[in-house]
Length: 327
Image 1 (cartoon, rainbow, N blue to C red):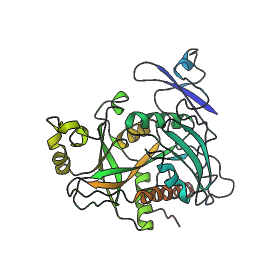
Image 2 (tube, rainbow, N blue to C red; image 1 turned 120 degrees about the vertical axis):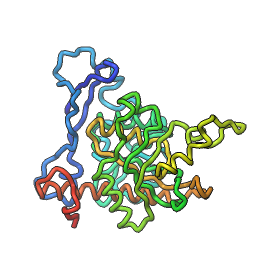
Image 3 (cartoon, rainbow, N blue to C red; image 1 turned 135 degrees about the vertical axis):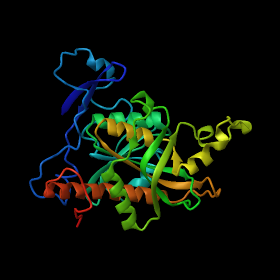
């Protein structure tokens, strides 16, 4: 177990505890014999040594062994975790996994760990919205998780994106307020390039229709996404929201991706997002379909990321690139 502490944005002392894992390398069937555990985590410039004389730093951590909300510890989860919103979606995601174990279920957070094609992987539901998703990122980071992939549903803006299609996020507009509590508003919510590549490769291998683009994350399902509120209430800006986003080339709208991507980048983690389209805001088409496609794509992406790590290590490089083979 490793620990570190850092000075938060508001001056609080924050403690971080994590277990250095090697799931994607040492535990992967593709890893060469004798592989050593590794960590993708990059040191954060605000981290302080755990030995610093800060006798009060634990006061900011309500539970220093297991997540206060998620109730998971370092040995409960794999290095890669999928993040659906709906706890009921956990069963859909794990349908093709093996050796599954539910390790925690508290409030909206349900966590199951297993394997997909022998690659260790976990799933934690986050509930609706960025505040609860950020809690999941925080507490998973503290126990050593290094890769996070949101698996959700969304509304699409271009007319050619149909219900059941997948949208893979390259970057997100931070329309939610949670990430503003962490960093200046012009900080980018960018998906990790390796995660995007793995998701695209997975969708191609599985034969799913997909689109890669920009996502808007909002705090409001109704007014924030241009829908009328109760009794037809509509704030002045709502009527133009969809047209403005479509003109800007935004592909889809949901409620969690930008916070997950922002926090992951701040903490030196890899993150991405793949969402199934339920509604098209241009054509009016709506159908709850394709949920298993996003689940299967994200699971395969984790397996491909493990293979990428092996290929990178064998080539002696730090970043995946198109010249490296996954065969």
